[in-house]
Image 1 (tube, rainbow, N blue to C red):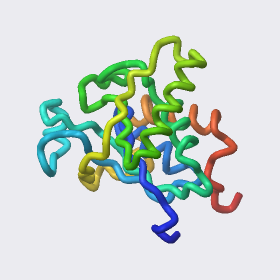
Image 2: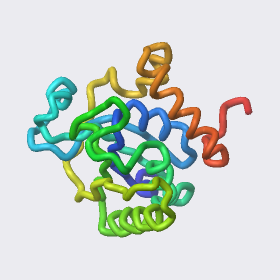
Image 3: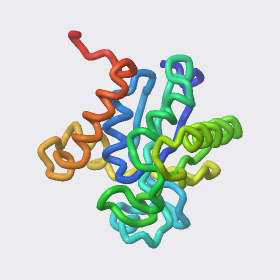
Image 4: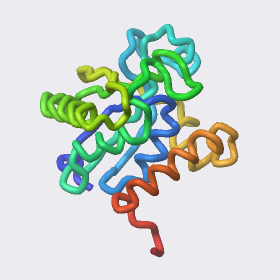
Length: 185
């Protein structure tokens, strides 16, 4: 894929293992990388981010083909796979590092994010207002190698079995028509 034809989204919605696993299955996604964004210190580590004192969120950087997956659609998947109505929390994961955030890479992304949030709120989809932070682009720091494609490599890990797997299953059911084609299918 020619990188000139791709765009990048940086999204935080709780633990990056969940987002990584879902976006890897989404048709039109070229690459997914777990990492950190939105904090004050350069080159944060997982251990430092977990303290909640660096200001970073766990995020994924998603490279996608907008001809196959428009940014608005990518955002609709993002909002469907986490709870955008809780501040600094996703399930049992609590802290600013788990906040719901869209780091807009352009003014067009900001406009789209604001529009999608308005649509979700107007539809009353969650019964509570969306509190997702719509932020400017921030430096992205890749997470340590063992975090990349974590779910695929560690499906029997308890967090993956009890938290990630149900989110992936819910996504696959709700967005069956948006999944990448499977090899041999």
